[in-house]
Length: 149
Image (tube, one colour):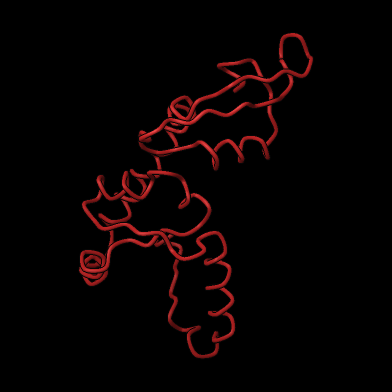
């Protein structure tokens, strides 16, 4: 928004734009959204209309970096887990999983089935809670060394 429109917006507005019209792949019906912020030249409040195509282009480098990171991770995955991924696919979680078209972009890049977890925004926190509830039983199942990080 700053570079293209000389419009300064807040984090909440940027997040709302990403959620409402952001996409990782072209949409059947492209979307538009009116966005308000502060004009960096005049210093006054102003609105402009942005399209899902513009937001997709702005997110392009970030999406590509995500895909490359996923591919690098898969290249370093142990054979047993790779076999599981071939059979079961990837389940995405976190707020980014809700971006329109992201599962299909990742599926195309990896050749794996990609699905989105139920309630992806809270599933990591809930799963961490389950693990912590059972840390006495499962605590020894995680072995992270500095070399793996």
